[in-house]
Amino acid sequence: MNRRHLQHAVGSLLFAAAALAAPHAHAAPAGERVEISSPIFPKTSVLYAREGALFPATLAEEEAMAHDASLTFEPLLVSCQPTHPTITLATASSSPTPAELVTNYAEVAKCAYETYTAKPYWIPQLVSDVDICATELGPDWALPSEADLASFTEADFLFIADTLIGAATGTSNWGTFYFSLGIFVRAADGSIQKGDLRPGAAVRVEPLPVTGDDLKRHYEGGLALRCIRRTPLE
Amino acid sequence: MLRMPLKWVGAMLATCVWQVGCQGQGAPSGFAEANPSPTPAPVYVDETPPDAAKPPGSSAPDAGSPDAGDLPKPPVTTGLQYNGAIGFDRRLP
Image 1 (tube, helix red, strand yellow):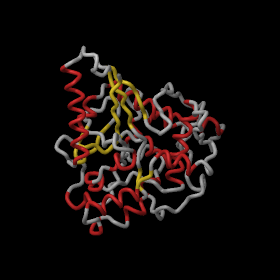
Image 2 (cartoon, one colour):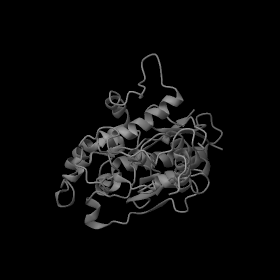
Image 3 (cartoon, chains in turn orange, purple):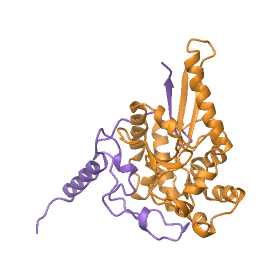
Image 4 (cartoon, one colour):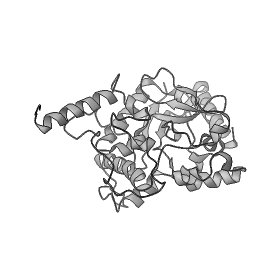
């Protein structure tokens, strides 16, 4: 577990402790805003060139590789708009409507694959060693932890699923992985495992079926690298 | 040879796709699978050279995707944000 993961874990604990210790204090947050990011998908060309025996030997090399490989949503909105003109970009004076946001999501899903051949093929060792969420989305984002998933209610999982179903209309088969509810998770023991956001899932977190040196090869298990941000509400 | 209107065939296929992808509590169980579509899923098996641009629609079949109006849709939530994230507020008890 690197320092960022530790900070996230400590922050979550402090947040929970504050809520329990002083539920009636004025300073206590009334709740929290939870955000689950769209998937960060890798450019497979970057990963394929540095996997297995060619996997980076230093953390710095891993970080550079992860950054080179990462495809994030907002840059894709802009770069995909010329070829996917139904994408609506926000301006200084207007924001897309909910229906336009749905279209944006579906179009980015298609574009990510069609134009950039994004695939859910991250190398687990890279996901474990590099804090990709913080690096690519900002320091307040983190890889979801087992504790994060344990804190969600069934209604939360249902809301996440319904949101993705609502955004899936009209998406070609090529983009379906953008709607995946299977994600990478930091397990309680510090390892990278697979998490299940589906409503009613019997098992939320379980080990990957690969171990050892296979963790340094791209994993075709269909897992999305989603990030989480939890912000206290005043 | 059995003949039936094309729209009947389309409706049957679409219904089949929807039922396969939405088992249990309306959850998108198929979305978490490696191959959520009953049709071959080239995303997970093709050997397309990485980063080779594919002309939109050139080879990506849309047959498995639901057409608006054909299928029941869950209510659109307001959770989708401009940055692509799903956001929701949780109130502490």
